[in-house]
Structures are given as C-alpha cells and as structure tokens.
Length: 238
Image (cartoon, rainbow, N blue to C red; front, side, top):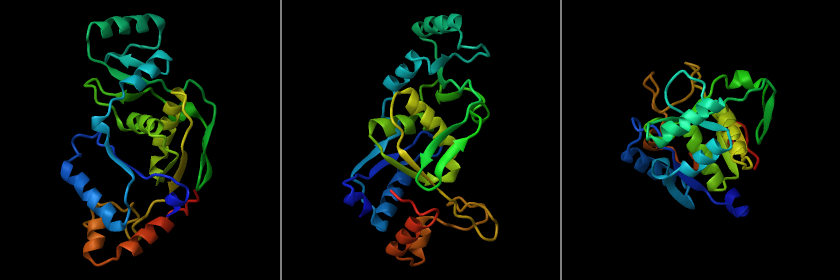
C-alpha cells in the first residue's frame, strides 16, 4: 500500500551471480512464497545472469575507476601497465575487472532511512584492496550487478539487512564512479536466535528451519508474517 500511495513500483530481481547456488526451482519457490505473502511485483523478474554489464564496465575502465587485471601481481594502475593491458586485451587474453580501492583515508558517509547516516571513518581501511567486478571467465559479481542494475532500473529505495553495509559502500562507490545518484538505503537490524545468538537463516546448522515455507506449513497466516516482517528490524520510514 505504501508503494502504491507513492506511485512506486516493486521490482523483482534474481541476483543469480553464484552459479553453484542458483537453481531454477529456488527462484520458483521464491515467487510462490512472495505471492503467498501478498507481495505482487510490478516489474521482473530480472536475472543478473541474463543481463549485459559490458557498457558500464567499459565506462568505469575508460574513466579510470576500474581496470583489466590479467592475473599477475603487477600494478595495473600505472600508465605503462595500462598500455600493456590494452595490448593484451586486443590480443584476446582473458582478464578480470577490478575496481580501484579508494586511495584516501578520508571518511565517507551516506544517508540511511533507519540509522540517519552510515559512516566509514577511513576508506582505505574499509576497502584495503581493489575489488573484483567481473571474473576472468566474464561472469560479473554481485556488487557490480546490484549497483549497475540499481542505476539502470532507477531504483530509489533499497531495504536490506545490516550485514550488507560492506556491500553498500562498494556499490555506492561504483554508482558514484558511473555518475549516478545513490538510492536511499535502509539497513534493518538482524533477527537473532534467542538461544544460539546467531542470525536466523533458512540454512541453520542447528536444525531449525526459519524459511517462509516452514512458517507456512505450521499454519502461520501470511498477513501476520508480512506485518511482523514489515515492522521488525528498525521501522523503515520511506
């Protein structure tokens, strides 16, 4: 209802960058559980594995924010190495794409709908090494896909758990390097098991099953679960 009041759209994305864990039946289960909760999406589903990120990667490389890594210990930031990288690229050699870590110990902060602002005191400590955007086999990684898709799909609000704050910093730097505004992030507190003091997970090693399917099977009403999830973890104000 909140989305509709603001004439917003709910976008469903399947960020299937991890091919070892991505299965078609998992996505279908997700669709079924969202519908059971009463969450109907307006756009999608969009699959990261089916999208092309080459244009954004080329923009980052051309503006100096990223570079092609041919797998050695060499520093590919220097002019001579960039020229060598271009020659090896023209020769068809495989390469990964890395985003240059901030060369500054300045602080960095972004607005957060729950926490007011999130601040990293020292960028060099927060991201000490250049991080991979795409592997040498051509597969893009999660942070690259998420940031580029947020820009191209004009995402305005991103609500997720606080364990994603490290990802948020990387995605914010990618978006800024591409010349895009940031969405408004909201990082919710985690749900913790009161006995084991661990984050609730559908893959809980203690044997507990906290999946939506499990809640559904024990008779919890979808409206009750949806209301609980909407109000727990920080009370997002959009």
